[in-house]
Amino acid sequence: MPYINFSTSAKVNDKGKLLEEISILISSLTKKPKRFVMSKMDDNCQIYFDGETPSCFLEIKSIGSLNPSEMVKPISDFIYEKMGIPMDRIYISFEDVPATLWAWNGRTFG
Image (tube, rainbow, N blue to C red; front, side, top):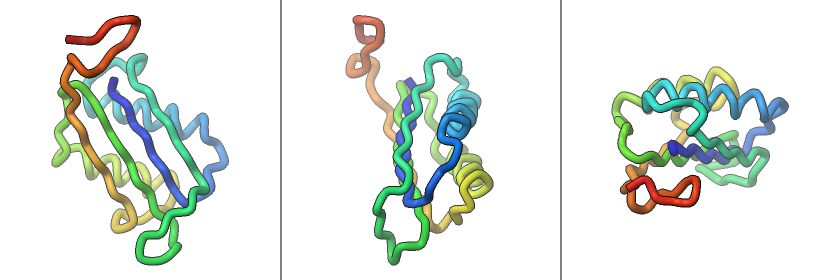
């Protein structure tokens, strides 16, 4: 926790680098250690969003530490800078997960 899952219709050449960079960003935005951030990406997906122009969907989950109104701009800027996907082609879903419903290392956090 936190967890970021993103799907994009764009092709990503250096997936490992992009996953590391977005993990660092999410760590800084949530103020949680990078070692606890898990990132997953599916690129080159078939996504239809008012046409087939490259688009992106991100799901961000965490136990607390989410402030969508403050996080959405830096995340959208990141996607635009790294992938060239305009902000109006990006959807982001934020979910604050109760600690009792999130487990790691054989036990829940709450």
